[in-house]
Image 1 (cartoon, helix red, strand yellow):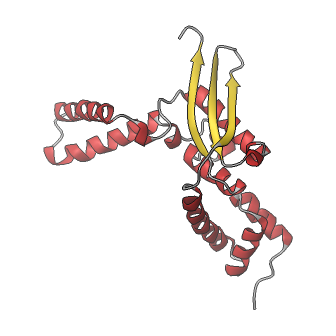
Image 2 (spheres, helix red, strand yellow):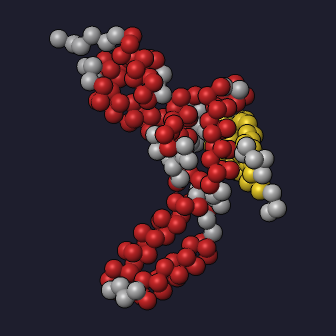
Length: 202
């Protein structure tokens, strides 16, 4: 006997995943009411849809700003989408603002890892290698140690790799995870194109 899917069940799943009503209902039906399985189905579908969306162009969007309460730190962020309809969407605008707030707080240097110049990565690797050797680490584990340290360094300076500074509100999700969620919610490719941070005296 199939499980009875109620409107409340669908609403709860939508709030948990950000998926649309019809997608949420279909996932619950397919999962026979098993919420965990339904979430898994939506994630798989969302990843496939996100891959397709990622191929589409982004020529609309917003420039969002955040100014800290002391008036001495602020940021501008350009967040792109596909249509002016989504650019005016309340959730999209709120997402852009949350990114601007995060950028002002953490001052990243790049949007994503693939933007880091190769020479900068090579320079960091050399520093970490020398440090590992000075610490007397065995040669066979130096590469693994350096790889881990480079990955950690990249996460610290790249916006998409960082957990949003408001960890409570955003459940410790990274900026990339938040971008994926808003992209799934609005049904369009969403891209953080660039940002700038402004500090008094700098």
